[in-house]
Length: 474
Image (tube, rainbow, N blue to C red; front, side):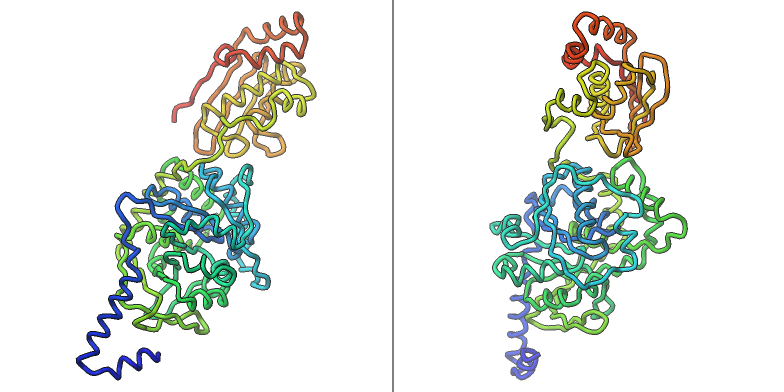
């Protein structure tokens, strides 16, 4: 306000020149929003992994022009631990398990929102638990490791701002290296509100008062959109669309208003051609209900407004239909962490031919269905229920990860030779049948060489000589 008073005291001739100089200074400070064509845009995403965060993360992972350098979790809609597990499960399921994940700092005393249970459970639309990703705990050294200071890195917040406040306090230089901070909010005139801002208002005030370059993404347009209607209209077999269908089913009838706040924040960040940046700069002043934006020539806050809501929804539809890009993860082709013979003996008790055959049947199903196994896949095994033929059932569990404990395997009594149907949540299905001559070959090998030698022999047999494979039409 002192600077504003000083400007009023300028002469009429000097005032336009001073105002122009201030405007040029502000525009130069925010010039990084113009990105070089073809150059990847780097971002760190800070998220509390509520239902809308999940959809926003899916959208970010589907964009080929954006490099997500790291994800940082924060307590908010979900608890810190559950939100971290949800994020890692999503990344691994979407073949993005190579992106670093940082578990944010705990902020005791913030309380639980009334929707915490629904958020923690994702309304039943859960992801597999973490399997291969090592999560780092938040620290200045960890954040320095994921923030390449030679690159202009943006910081997109989809949750409360506690991590940014902590980074500013612990590593001011690292905080200053952030190119710009993007914060979604609902704007009404110059009043700024939003649950993420008020849940941890101390952190919000600290970040807005830090002097960092901040873009407030006006997501008030979400209030004009029938979120349930839009999400229900999504079609296709992509992971985001399938997840959205499961989420809506879990919420059930009478879902009410499902807001697209973080969805629209993600698309505004990704598609600056759909955004209009106010030339006016602001500072933010905390109020009882949120923050007021105060015009200031040297303010550190600008507003990014979605000017094409229909275009934003179309962009979201395309991103969700495309699904996450393969950004590097573990796959079913990875080297076994435990030698196969050791694994089969540990689970089944010995290396018999039928447990080996079942194991190879399960692995073949994963390869044909492009699945990593364990989750998002089910098996229906048709086999004799007497040994040694029934040992195949144990092998299928080990090879496919479909287990009795998780409830994603069903066994039906059937005569030899055994067969099984494997299905994925994406609707892919394959039927694998043991060739008719295999039971006789098993018997002959056991009689000639013994059980263990027969088991090892079937580890080396070509799969095409063991099984027939039938893919169901999609």
